[in-house]
Image 1 (cartoon, rainbow, N blue to C red):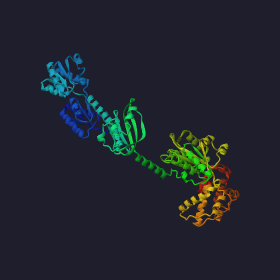
Image 2: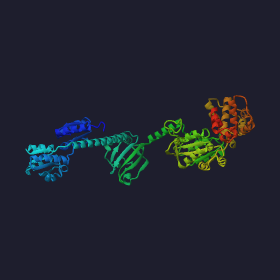
Image 3: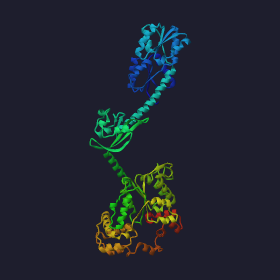
Length: 638
């Protein structure tokens, strides 16, 4: 492993030389030093201070080093081959051979007696302090020569007993190096996990407290200290029941059930906590609580709402913004309020300018989704391909010009909130099918994508067209209609609520004068009566436009009935004006301007752009292109 620092501490010089040869053969850059017992421990401490991660040693020296340092110590194992070599070498010094060492090292040595034609005594020791007793036992048994590690050999020499050192071969050193490298990889991985966990705990916005099976605190991060005004050094190991009785650790430990999203008050701070059992093999062995300050949660939600506002994904109007004295309109608003309490799909029917989107926003702001996004789109204002990409999004490379990284569709952006689909009757059959799937499955798939994305969105659709007639003409799917019209809201036109004219004039005029920074004019009773005689085919939108013209023209002076007559063409209803002027063209101007007039009048006389294109003898795509060229596409919306 790159950068792994390993050191070999050999108890005797021959082992150090052999380790050097092995490292050279393996191409390993490993520090090697010679030192036995105390000297070896001192060397090990020096290596560790210089960032050595793993020590390799042998025998008693390895045992002594392991007790002194806090890094892994890998022992060069003494194999059966090493014992056989040493006994065979000792055979030349005497027939009675004592083999000293740990049980797992020397076990089975006695079985070599017949093979090597010697008498062997196994002298087992449990630790290094028993080495001297083993030597004395060997002398009592009349052993000629002793076989053992460096410690045993040194003691045998003090008693004048012949000895042979059990040396390690290259294969044992190579194996120890491989083992050290494997341990190093695992140790670094675990250290990385520990540091990652430590970083998470130290810098998490949530307070985290853990308890063991007995309910004693085993972990507390700085955020929990701060929220609960505790010192973790003083509470570690203490029963959580006494330190934090507000958090139900005991119940979670006893019953193994999650406690989620509960409020508690600790040292005057209102907190929200989740307590989760730690389960191993079906047994609860502890519990972890995550705690958040309610003020922090509120601040985060406020920030999210502000970001949505800046993106424009918000509903600006509520039911309180709707001005009316009409019983019919009041009933409609009350019906909309009831619709807001549930999450069912809504179809809003109403003529152009009646305020369908205002109702949609009011429903959203009165619903449980009010803190979620509100996304609105006019289905008649975009071509089929553009509308599809706007609604469902696309993946990178889905088509020429697709944005790098792809793009979220409006259904994804509206997740957790409401999507308002205006002019739903203008949808193409293909998009109708995709919308039906969204309503049925609550999931979408981006253009060019292969991943299904779940969406939690309430759909409010609106139209000024008769969808039942479109169904009969096979222009609108019956199954989609039934999905959209679970709840139906019919917005009355202005001509059916003429009693609202005075109050609407007052409110709209005030807002317009403020926006235009022009003095607000007064309206005579006759002027208001004149406004009530108009049929208002453009509804509230038409009234607002007329009031804006009046405010600009009158600039604070009195508005009389004659002013109204001048602007409403002697009260001729708009539809009558269109009938009168239908087929009459102003043939002055450029060819493009004349073409503009023809397209405008054809669109007014048709129920859809498809019908208009057919009447003009051009394709729908060509019609869209010409509308776009006029750079006034919204004026062509039916």
